[in-house]
Structures are given as structure tokens and as C-alpha cells.
Length: 426
Ligand SMILES: [Zn+2]
Image (cartoon, rainbow, N blue to C red):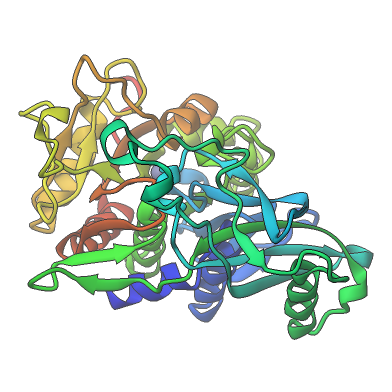
């Protein structure tokens, strides 16, 4: 659990999550591959590939790379507020213009100490990852000025009501925003004069913590889906080697639909798998044969039963916190799971003595989706959608159970190390 908290706190943005993942892989002996170069890899070797800064694929080659792939997928991005290209909104005071990324619970961004982090693009193709602590806050409107907010609900206009207040004097040149950004770039040893553009996200400044009356709860931002990224990565590092190639893919852009050059709808994964299966086979059908012998576990967080809203779940399929990994089923393929793919995951759970749960949404409630069905549709391999149960999904500060962290890692480790892939004809 402590390791998960430090992973989350090191990963305020997808770009930081990839840097932290790459750092851990590097420390474990993985070498970085460049998509622009030819890859020279031997069986058993470990490597990783980054695309677009926010997506990463880690591989441990099997004894026979073309024999197939056991894959775990998750996503690095989280819903929230991103900084617009011309962000200074100067009224009497200086506010920051933001754009909504994905589907955050907007009210959770009010009255939180907000930090800023992300990637700055500099002259000459250079980039810097920056972090600016406690740059501002989106103040809630006092109840005296909105007497019905508690009875009729809070209505937020995303254009006008979500701007953080940064500074009290809007006239100063350079602006407080430019000043802090320049300082952050200089701290990274880069020339602030070279700033051309950026991808910057706001995030809650409060560090992750363990809490609850018996320290059973994890209070943290971005559990969806950094908790799954952490579990997938840790499992890859711990799993015993096998003949098939083990793969961990962490995608950016899930929260906005995955349609991007590096998201789950891209050919990033397929392109990497093609290059790997070509390592020990020159046959034109090597990739097709390898994919037919492959399996994917798509790990994304699941909706635990909410103590105050029990009616939101199907009573037979209402996962509880601390009761183990959840297998997600939706016959309309909002989840890619089928009976055989459920069996692969359930067997891995059994093998390591971990109990699992099932989730099916109510028929009168629309079902969310995730990277599982998108990846399955793109590369045509059997997939199961799973995830640990959580509450407050898409809040600026989410909640899961400490007791679920270790079991998911053990199950994914067992799957990567030993699970057998079902016959694709079945
Ligand atoms: Zn998610």
C-alpha cells in the first residue's frame, strides 16, 4: 500500500506516470527501445517503449517470442482540469482558464488546494516535466449568495465556474502564471525563454494517505486508474519468466475515448507485438499466429457498493470494498469479458487463494466502458475486464480498500507467470 501511495504521488499527470513507470522498469533492468530504430532483442530480454509521453509498453520476452503474449493493460490518465493555451483570465484578479478533461465530478474540484503539473515544450524539441505546488484554488460560492444550493443542488458552468484564482493583482507583467511556469522550467535546468507550448493539468495538492477508523481505507487521487497501473507494473516485475512474452501496456487518453495516436484505439500495441513476434520468426503469418495464442487482462477500477446508495447496484453483482478483484461483465460488450475469459482470471484468483467478485450493471442503468473492448476489437485477442472495487470514482480524491491492493498484484503475477491461454476457436 505504501508503494502504491508513492506511485500515485509521483504521478500527478500521465506524463509523470510514464516517467515513474520507466524509472521503475529501468531500475529492474529493462532497457528503453526507440520506435524509430531497429530493435535487437534476445529471448528473455526486458524492454520498454514510450509513445506520446503518456503511454508505455513494457515487455519481458519469452523463451520463444513468437509463441504468444500474456498482456495486462491499464490507463495512465485521470479526469480533471487542464490549462488552456492562453490561460490568463484577468478580471480584477488573475484566474486560470481551464478545459475539462474527461468526466470529472466537477464539484470535487472546489475548495481544494490545487497544484499544477505537466509537460512544457521548449525550443529545439526539448521538453521539461514540471510541478508547481499550490498554485491556486477554485473557491466555492458562499451559501449566503446561493441559498438553495443544499436543497436544489449545485450547478456548475464549466466555462465560468471552474477557474482557479491564482493571484490578486491581474495587471503585473509577466503574469503570476508565466512567472511560476518559468521558475519551474528553470528548476529543471532548462531555459524559460524557450517555452513554446505546454500540456498542463491541475491536481489536488494533498498527498495520498491511509485512513479510516482501522486504517482500512486508501484516500488518494487518481486511483482510477493509477492503482491498476501500479498493480500491472508490479506484477510484471514480480512474475516468473515463461515461454510466452509478458506485456504490460499503460495507455493515455482512456478518459476521453482512447482515439489517439498512443491510446487504446491506436495501433501502438499491435505495432510493438508485430516487431516482437518477428524476432524469432520470419514467417509472414508469425504475428497472426502469436496473437491467436494471446490473452489480455484489462485492469480498470470497478464500482464498489456505496453504503448510502445501495439501490444503484444489481443486488447479486454488487462488489464490496476489501473483498477482492472484480470481474466485469456486460453482454453488450461494454466490457470485453466472456465466459472463457472470466475463467482464466477466476482460475488465477483460485490458484493464489484470492476471492473475487463479479460486477454487472443494472439493466436500467447505463454501463461504463474501458480499454478492454477497444483493445480487443483492434487486435482481436480474447480479453477479460477486471478491476479493484472503489468509491468516489472520478472525484478529485477517490477511495479504495487497503486490503485489495496486494491481492490484485498477486493474481496478476500468477496470470502473467502461469495462466494458460484458451483455444481461440472456443
Ligand atoms: Zn478508468
